[in-house]
Image 1 (cartoon, rainbow, N blue to C red):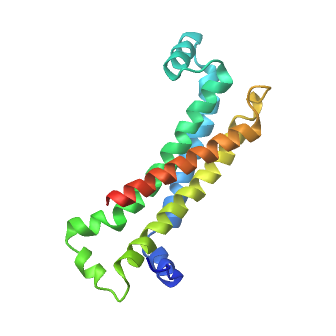
Image 2: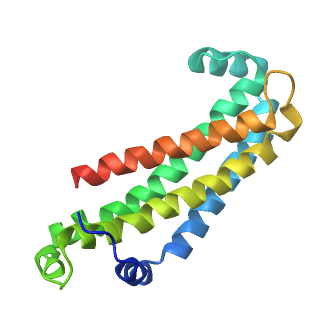
Length: 172
């Protein structure tokens, strides 16, 4: 495959409103994570027991970590999925993909120049939400859960979301 000319990636960056999408997704994710960190400890004991059993975790710190990791994954994956699906399948469904592929750029370079911004957006939003997750869980850190462990779990979750986006890209 040809190396990706960054000129085309920059051109595709200008095509999508990525900054607005990233800001909106980041704001939604931050509200979700911080809302979870505020609301879950205030739930009745019976509800916490059901959540702990359904997620197979023990203790409030582990329950909070799993809930916030789900929020990090959800936002990082779906903001990238929206951009990936707008990159190739949407023009294909609208009948405009043939016009796009006749550009003086090899098709593989064109596709990757549209996909790389989506992966970068997911990584940036996921990184920011992983840091917000650590801030939200700050009062729960003890011997079982550390800030470094929570950040590492968040970044691993983001890596999984990006790998899933890569698989989605292969299917488009």
